[in-house]
Figure 1 (cartoon, rainbow, N blue to C red):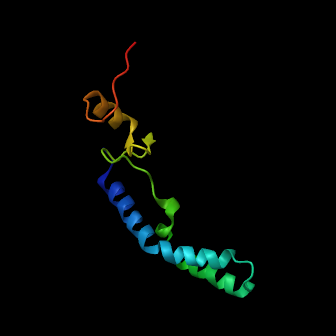
Figure 2: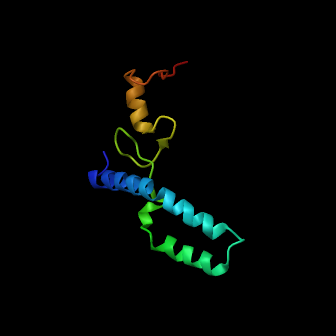
Figure 3: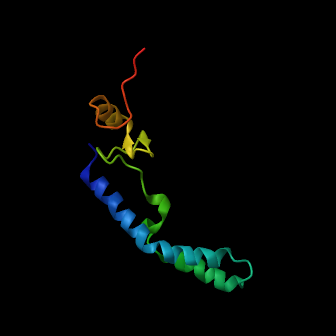
Length: 101
């Protein structure tokens, strides 16, 4: 099980990303618009830099929903390989069976 503080920090980041998404997208559109004057684009760059860093989507870490493990994460199932194996062996994940040949 991962540290509770790490899991909570990631949840806080997800909320910050959701709150800041529209603002960041608008500023990025201004920055990438070549038709605007360079001064306006530079001001937008400074505003974007002044926003909280945790508002960036790349700061979110994919974590297992069951254990909070950050590595060996399957996006489709939103869990780690270890949790998948344990739940699959007990028959709690639909469509997953232990292989044998």
